[in-house]
Length: 59
Image 1 (cartoon, rainbow, N blue to C red):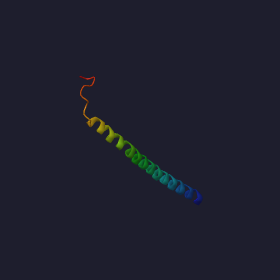
Image 2 (cartoon, rainbow, N blue to C red):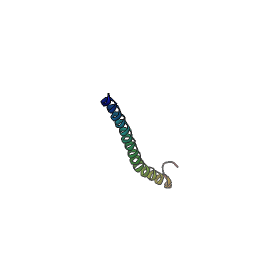
Image 3 (cartoon, rainbow, N blue to C red):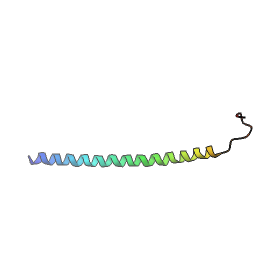
Image 4 (cartoon, one colour):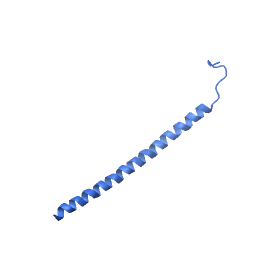
């Protein structure tokens, strides 16, 4: 009976660690997404801020 209780205890510890690893993976993924997407938004704002050329097809 003691070995069964030990097995349950180890399984609970493993699931706890897998939750921590999953959380770390999500945090790293979020940081990478922010690091990649933020410069893209900055670049798009620079493009939008440029004045439209006079004499384009819109006039």
